Image 1 (cartoon, rainbow, N blue to C red):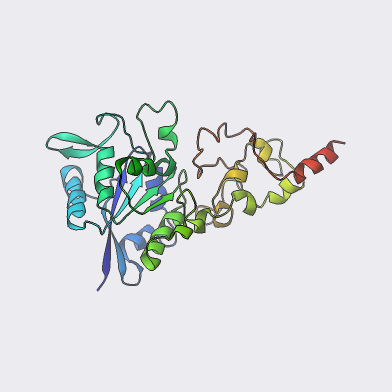
Image 2 (image 1 turned 30 degrees about the horizontal axis):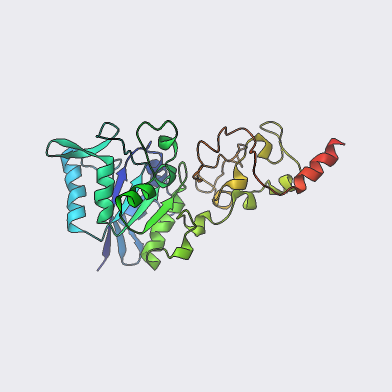
Length: 296
């Protein structure tokens, strides 16, 4: 018999970019993920997803609540977006109860309390991201902070990115199915899977040799390292250089643009301005030597 892994996918303060990137997973395709056995004998049963489910309104909400009741302790909760904590439901609600809107905060805390595990998908869910940027009138917070404040202790995995690569999410889910929930050593101190976020972009960047030799691009389109044009690769953990995007076609630096550090908790406030050089960051200085030689 095939084992079903129920999944509830909530969208809170988000732009749907994380949902769209997931739908563009290439290997396996989203059809494979939703219909086939992602691992022998295990099928992902996506019970609630506001972007792709056929049901709407009360029928959709009922499917979510029935899953939470019938599969208590068995389902995985995926949260896509930061969580508004400002009073009332004026900054976001998911359905109604007794004729009144249910806040996103209430949905996240109720569903997380009875979940097998929680996955925070995207930088907004993982670290707050754009919705939590100052002045943050919505009181948006990352999932980790919300669960801690509410005293909810559940296995939590952060999959940051704006948006995250679909492989990071699908690979994490496949890992849970094949090997169980991640051990402490499988995650970094920000609860990101080391398999995908274990190295700095700077370590694997094909322009790293240019950095070491002090060959920096002075304007977009130039050859050379993009550090002087605002690249945040030296402080950003992700495997974009080796995994690449759009079925492995290319990635941001390959297209001539600097990394903006979107997988980091500092995004977007502390990684902006995106096209200005990092300051007060300790980096290898071999490049400075060669830059000085060229000036002479």
